[in-house]
Amino acid sequence: MKSASPKSSSAPAKHSPVTPDHGDGSDKRARILDAALSLFLRYGVKRTSIDDVAREAGIAKGTVYLYYESKTMLFAAIAERLCADMLAAARRALQEKAALTGRLVGFLDAYVGEMHRLVAQSPHVEELTLSKESVAAATYAEFNLQMKGLLRGVLNSAGVDHKGAGDMFLAAALGALRTGDIAEKPYRARLTALVDTLLAGLRHIAAK
Image 1 (spheres, rainbow, N blue to C red):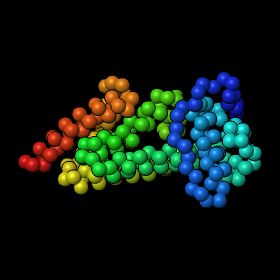
Image 2: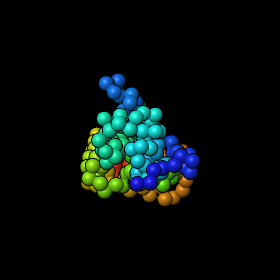
Image 3: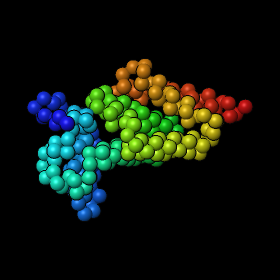
Image 4: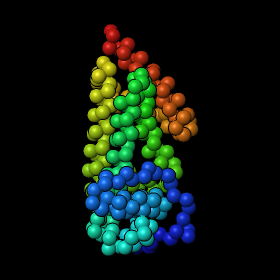
């Protein structure tokens, strides 16, 4: 496998830092994950080796293997981290003291908008998020189930229990990506209009 060469790289895409869990070895584990994600975003998974990760993290190759026995397992850990970050952001959005539209827009931006902004920053993000490798596929499947469950829950609690309502809001979030700038502010503005329209329509149907 060809190792990534820092001299030929472009600037790494932005990503959220790992927060250590303060357990034994958590600092080294965090450094490994930070290094791996940075390299995966710059060069892609296939072009990044464990040697590259060790150099980027400033630790011995053997130490990486103490925590992750293969690049496949490291890839799985990165997938889990990305999903955990997005799930946490989505939950925070739904827990905000705001009107339903605002909470839904925050949730949908965390679920749909943020990932597409990451894809725009790095061509290798899709390699991380659309992988068919079984170690990551199960993680993403569970993540999507949890996200859709959260969406159904907030809609049901607001009395929006029309069959397929969650899918409608997800379709709106995807559609808003294709109609203009995907930067957070303009994307959320378009999404707000769509969410307001959907809520009004669904509430009108429910009132009949």
